[in-house]
Image (cartoon, rainbow, N blue to C red; front, side):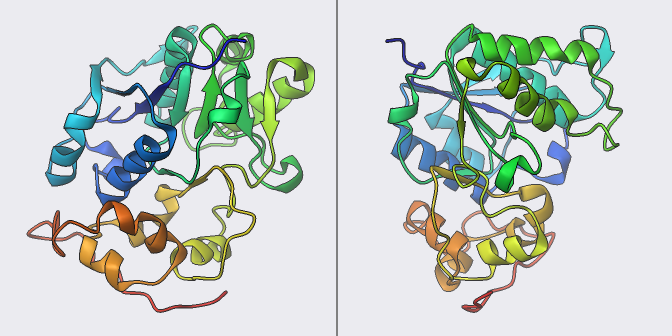
Length: 279
């Protein structure tokens, strides 16, 4: 039986400013968790603009850099937001190479070995398909029929950015296709990759609480767009001093680094040292 290639793909740096979220401690720790638990043959890092800085200095020897131009159109439709550009690239590289795509803020808890036989794998976002099937974690064989269908669906892409169609193709479309072609994709339950969710109470559960997250899935999407106040300018010392689910997960990957490693001379923010709060 065919297995997904042992390739982990990241798509990052579609814009020169990195959307205000440069390569940071959280990204390094997430990538380290993927290398540690997925044991890939190679990590392909697809970007137009290469990151820089101390956390990238640690990361660069671990990856195979694939410089590219961010697509500005798909099937003649404008891709105006970097998130949608990255959404197209991840499907293209999986269709070409196969493997595992991870957003840079996905922390891996355990091996995906038992998933690699399936030609495509996605996880539900929200209990009972409330939101759809997000594209922050995708497994797929090269030329996967499901991934080809998904990319082909971008012929009807119409989002102009953060509008009412924002999640139509990245989240809602794969859920629709999975109902139409269930034999082409393995759909994992809500807790596989996307639990807790991005709601304020769930972000507190991840970043301000040590109340166990159960059942713990294969990985956690850390929702950095909404959680950036917890993550900006985070240092190993702050990780060691803070007792929450998130800090406990990443601690092993920064524990050998100095307390202030990576801290900029002029921090953009000061992440709080949070107590053990139970929500």
